[in-house]
Each structure stands twice: as C-alpha cells, then as structure tokens.
Length: 432
Image 1: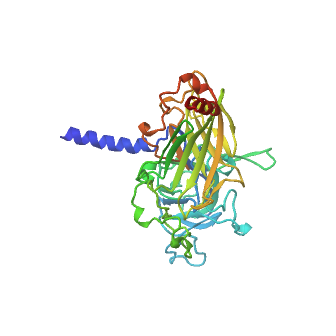
Image 2 (image 1 turned 90 degrees about the vertical axis):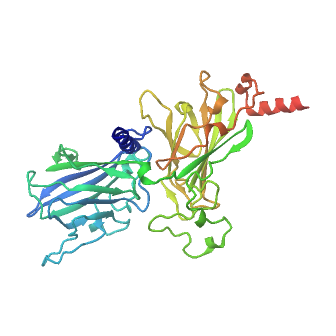
Image 3 (image 1 turned 180 degrees about the vertical axis):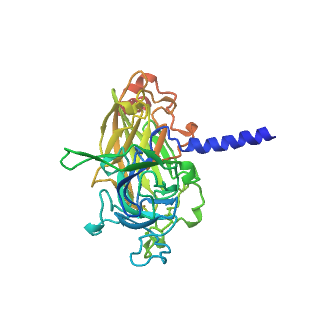
C-alpha cells in the first residue's frame, strides 16, 4: 500500500514538473535579472530587468506583478520606472520615509505617460511585455530600486527569496535567486565596457495546468471536400460560466460598464456550446497541383477583453514550406533544429494586431498558401489539420480525431492533385 501511495505521489509531482515544460517552446521562460549598480550608505541601487524569453507567450494587459520576500529587514527607499502597490508600516522612520517598508513588497510597472523623472529604460508600458518570438526589442521591462538596511558589499548582501510573478494571472513558478557573472554594459559611444557590481537571476516558468483548470480556447475544423463542419467540443473550456453568459442580442450588453474589464479578469462570454473566450477555425480552402490553401479565423467571444499583441502558434508538418501568409505576420519556431513543423502567426502592426472584444469586429482572419511535398502530402486521415494550436501561449482544445471532416471514400487518390474547381466540375458531369 505504501508503495502504491508513493508511486501516485511521484506521478502527481511529475505531472506538475511536466506541465511547466512546453514541447513547442522548450527553452521558454521569464528571467528576472538584478544588477547592483552602486553601493549606498546602507544598501545598494539595483536595475531590475524582466526578460520574456518565451517565443509565443506574452504578458498582456493589465501587465506583470512581481513579488518577493526580503532576507533581512530591508526597505525600499525609492523606485524609478515602477512602484509598490502598498507602502506598509514605515512609522519608525523619521525624516526620510521609505517608498515601501513591507517584508513582502509587490511591484507593478508604471503606466505610459508618467513624467520623465519617474521613467527608466524599458519601463512604463503598464506591465505589457511582448513575446520574444514576436518582438525581442519589446520583450523586456525594467525598473530601478534603491534598497536600504541591506548589505553594502558582495559578501554582506542577502538575496531576496520566495519570488512570485503574475503575468497577469497565475501560472508562473519562480525558482530561487542565483548569483551569476556580473552583467557587462557598453557606454553610449560603444567604446567602453562597464559591469554591474553584483548580479543575480531568477527564472520563472509557466504551467497552463497551474494557470487554469480548463483550456482558454478551442479549435473547429472544415474543408472544401466535405460539407461537414467539425465544431469545438462541447464545454471545451468548462461550462462553469454558462449561468453568466449572454446572448449576442442581450440588453445587458447595452448597459453602462458591461464591457469594462474586471480586476480579476472575469469574462463576460457569449453563450456558446463550447463556452470558450477564443475559437480558432482552420478551413482547408483550396487544392492546387503544387499548393494548397488554408483559411485561419480567430473569433473572440469575450465581451470584456481586447487581445493586444495576440499570437497563434500552430504545429503542422507542412509549415516547413509556407509560400505566403496574406493578412498575418508569420515566423517559424524551430524548437528543435532537425524539425521545422511549428510557426507563430500574429497581427500586422496597426492593422490587425488588436483582436477586439466579442461582436461584429471581434475576429481576425488570414489565408495561408503552402507548397506540397508530394512524398508526404495527403488529405486522408485528417493530415491537413493542425496537430497543436496555442492562442497567447495557452494550448487550445482540438476536436477528437474521429470527428474530423473526412475525405469521401469514392474520391480516387489521383484526384487529390487536381484543383478543387476541377473536382467540382467532374462531380457535376458525373451527375449529369
């Protein structure tokens, strides 16, 4: 009995560990780097930088929230580019009062438009950080913190511990701070190198299992060769919100504040059988001699959420030979050098990089032209449909394979090489 219990416990722990590993982005993580730039009379001044090294998972509005526990009795004298959400009890200080006296401070980014004297490099974006694969230059957020009642040398400084990261919700697990080689900086004229007095890193990894118990999106499928449309699975994202959903013509939607996001990001969903905030539809549209064409449509069913900087990651064997993407930007994701079957679609800047809330404008779509590899290409057994789909870094629920639109058994294999219009004409001639 003890052996069985031990085995079950091991499997549970293993599931947690595996959940934080993403096979499509095996090296993805958020790294928080502390660079001590100078010593002060009772502590140090550090530049804290949040690097998002995840290929297709960004930090969306309302942004990141970073927390930790001080090892001793440290206080934060001042901050530039960020602020703590609470000051705490600073009653024992006379004269200069610290910015924060809490043992466990919680820090958030400043909003855009703050005065210049409160800004720091890569700050003040409301905590929104792009995915590394989408825009490396925007996949960073920084602030400066002046710490007091701390060590004043490399030997006396105690590293903060128990780091937490909300981005913006749960799902991230942070490891302990580890001292690493000091960061080297280039001066603006790039002729001189300087380095931090001390540097430590904290690595945070994401687990969809920890973030939510149900998926956040689902996939529906259709094709030109079968009139059947395979919908998202019923209750794909859980039906706990079914009592609070609204129909598209509901009077509730015209009420003041109905579309205002809640602090806990509670959705206001349109009533559907799948009850997902996001649906991704994959339609096999056309078949040519050497190419085939797919239409991808993303629909938002949440009346309280606009998705900025959205990303769509797809795994399919033919993504190694994309000819053209018409209305999205696209980047291949080579998670493994020998395999090129995964890519990331995202909106064109100022055109469709914002997926609006549910309603007439709550969708974005594009078509993709792919070149065939005659050794592997087929429409049989659902080969033309994606293997995995991720929206904003969360895996979407696919329909069961036995429900995919199937290729009619009467269609000879050789006809698969003809365009769809020729197939239609042959069918009409046969009927006539």
